[in-house]
Length: 160
Image (cartoon, rainbow, N blue to C red; front, side):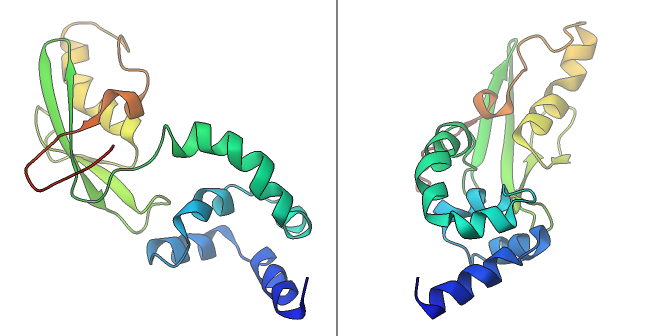
């Protein structure tokens, strides 16, 4: 490793979670590294020493769990879901203070206007009144990432 790369690796090891959130919120981190960098949880020293190896092994596992299943739609994307005969819609909004930089604003139903920091939180809030009225508990609402899908609209292409 040359001197520049060594210095960069040492600087990266000193970053705190709030530093990474700051960089992520401003789009200053490559997309492929944002989830990996914020998931070190106290392993800064280890990640400096094994940075090249971490990209190969854990990244494959994280891609299948985090990126593939939990990739946020773009800000402005309209989400929709049907639950026990009712249709719900929500919108992905920018929320820089959250780790993901995004949140979900519920657009329809009794919870319209509510903002949640996660897809699952939005699912629970959107369906809460219906579930209470019908004594449904958590029936059919276990994962917000599979509950919501991106609504296809003219001029708005999204892979969800």
